[in-house]
Length: 500
Image: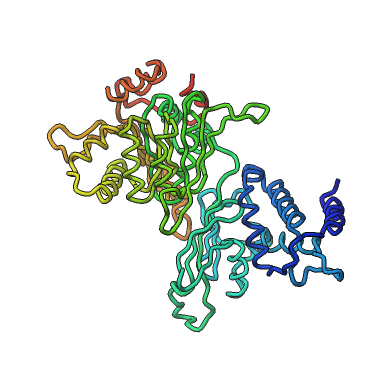
């Protein structure tokens, strides 16, 4: 039955069942916030759907909310003092799901990021940042601070952006991350000091569908053999981290690597927010692998029972994990907890911000020591480099491409210097020609290829042996270096490589 007709029948039926319903009038803002909470609480119903089906599912949740609660809202009450449910649903759908001038970018799956620099808007499509244009090629920007305010309230939900709370983080009902800065923290335009005060924000979207390593190879983010080695990391019981700056694509690559976790491995996934999905489903939709997904929340002055990232990490060892994935770690406390999990003998994976393998070790060590107190740095470094096996470094290049620029083993500390980590580079991204520029001097192409520069250490080989990984699976990276060796980018013979 058509959705509106069904709703009309529900409304008629509901109008006859008003006896005992709450007759207290509520504000539209209160009802909108309550409806948003209902939508967020039921995100499992729409989070993995495509754009069209997602909007239908969210609208149905709005209908269900109105018909179940039948709120009395001024302006949405009929002559018999009953809720005008049809009119109220239309208003809630508009206020919650219509993002005005941003709507086209919100539903465009090629748009990865929306950036608001005050009045002006930029979008990122396939690694390239450009002006936000309408269908006719005209630049779109906010016409007034009032227009921006209306749209940002929809994006931020119940998170308030004020001079007192000038820096906020939120999530849209679709699950997209929003980082916003209040206009009071924006410097004035010298050319227009009396102009309107605009806020700024960055909205980061996520892909509905997971990319596998073969697909990422086709983009030349990494080579076939690099992908095969990374597919062995989860199956081989390695502890590995994927690092890089913001928007480098490290989470997408990390998600692809994690598809190689064997279904029989008890996997615990902790995230804030949820961006990685490790559920393996059969044709009936049943999740058949042993995986537990947990999502952390941020709270001021949390209690030990609140589901913060640190508390969930502390709880993790009681949940019988074999392999632990932490999504992304950010705070000193989270780095300390990650070390605790590794020290308990569990292979671990996470992402965080760093620009090189040595930078990744330095970042981890600095955060850990800041939280742990007086532990000597050389002892902490020795522990970290003994537990950590592989570092993957990814970068977004000036031409908009994303490349894994370094894959390194961590072998321990240097024999003659306990304060220096011993790093064994396996692959690097080698710049082999001059870049290309456009007429305006912008970089449009950076030429390079991936190159194997090292062999597996005995530390990693021993790990593989203990996990039952046959030497035939990693011989390609264990043979002597050959200057004629060429990396390929076919994307073939990679899927499930680490599981076979």
